[in-house]
Amino acid sequence: MGCFANIIPLWKYITKFLGPIIFIGVERGPDDLVVTFLRGLFRDRLPWSDFKAIGQPAILAVARAGWTFEELNTLADLIREGRFVEEMLDRARETARNNRIWIHSRNSSEPTSHLQTQLDTFKEIIEKSRINYICPQCLKGFPRPDVLRQHFQSEKDDIHQGLAMKDTDFGTFYVNYQIAIKAFLPASLLRYGPDCFKPNFVVEHYKDDSEAGW
Image (cartoon, rainbow, N blue to C red; front, side, top):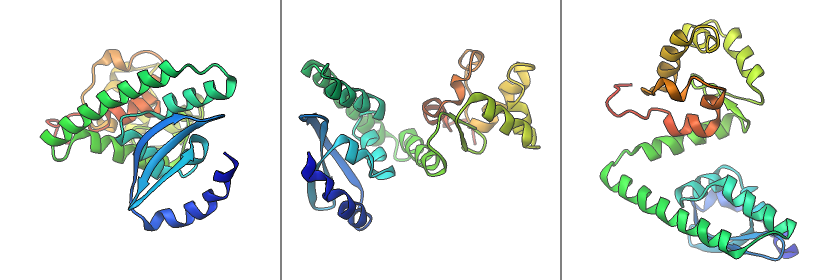
């Protein structure tokens, strides 16, 4: 894999001129996953650790191909730890294939599909921060729930103040959370713990209501 190291600086320089990345597939390497992908007319291969270092374009390519960063990170870790089993990658490929079918069918029936909204939201989140909890109102990221809570309390608008009331006035929180995330959600999804502020949850549900009129 050492030969790939010299490619990365040049690759990072030229990628912005070549158009979006298309994630083709992934296979086991000696000490990492190896990703095959297209950028413009160029087909290339990189270790997973180097591919994800490309940043936002790589993240979007992975999502569009039906994979998840968490899944690929786990598989790469298993290779490095010597605990990788090929069937794990086969199952992940099958899951990604099914996800692509769903993505294609939804895009075909919805020209401005919610999937694209999710990807655009994820892009905005990534541009602002890559951390563990997201404010659904302003899409800023925070490392811990207590820091997120301080953010809610420091902002003086009604939405942020309402988001700060999750533990003290759930009704007010519930109304303001839905306004912030621009979707109608069951209260049961929001009531317990801080999961409703995690990036994946915010991305999944942001503007997830075509009839809401947001």
